[in-house]
Length: 486
Image (cartoon, rainbow, N blue to C red; front, side, top):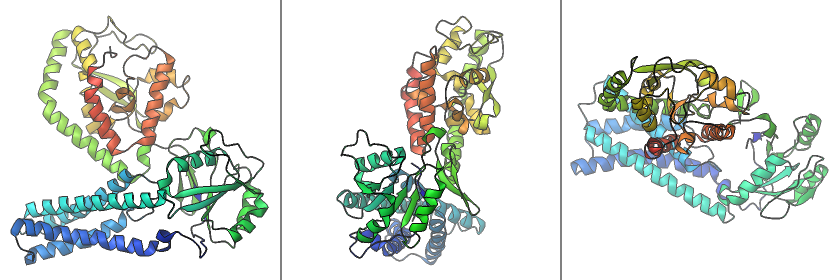
């Protein structure tokens, strides 16, 4: 849920039990020093394992010093030392891996430019990289488990009060109850004319702390770490009045807008110049430039490897298509890709020539007379999709994403399914989250296509490199043996 920060300082009383937050600056400094120490220590350990001595030679000492400098730069550029409260461990480890990989990428370029590669052992560099990364990953995981355990037992918990009880706050409160490790607690709310009841909560209704006019008195006598304002966006004067009353209290303020009716997709706050903005709809891979680069590299690397390994199979399939019926081996069709832009998607031809020109969005069905016997085999095993690896190399497709539908299918379904065109906020994929969950091939009923779209949007919201790798693995296990592709 989107929380827009209105201020950035935190007000705490002397009785605050939040020991970790109290010493947050010292803990942050210790973590930064520890990370740099791991870079040096892992180099020394790798040298000891390789050469049996603790003191590295002069060339190795220079390499360690140079890499340490690059570590200072990369660790500062990547958001490693932000607050990870409420964020997933997987995302933190991914950014850690990118930062550490960036350190050695810079060192590799440096070594190449000054021809330093002949001076130090490449095996030592590999051992150094693997050992250092493994140490950092284990340390961050243990630290996260330790902090989550403390917060689950009531330590370092931030106390939150809310002005107005609307649907977004209800959802956040339910989430915090189910996940005490986040370390945030909504202790009550101040009523407004727009309040909702909490239905289905695991506890009774949040306690009402009074009217908004009583907020200042409550802050004077109770420890509060954050105040959330949950009022309709049209209540600008009420919000300004609250902010004016809180002017003398350096406390975290967040605006929790109710945007559920806006058809949101990966909403988040942003800033352009000095103006705050709210992104209502955006693709999952737009949320971080690190993810964009990582996904692009993963796509092209795996696509290239697949082509190098599978080219004999693809050549054999092309010959089989030519022998099965007259016509070209490859079939091109206009599809809509990222941003709704059209591109030509490649497939091995599985139908007889001139058999796909019927008017309307006609999908292939069971025992379809247009499909050749060899084409039926290709469609059932998904081997007809292999030429799309070249689409991935060219940048018009991704290995994983919503499957691209024919242009006429998009025109047909966008009028019938809400948020259907949101699928085009990311590149289309050879396989996708909907396909590994059984929604592949013919969609004779509208509800089947709606379910497929729901899975596509769920993928966009949840996108991660891990999810992409999981879908690729599930494709091999599940999709290749499905019987509903005709």
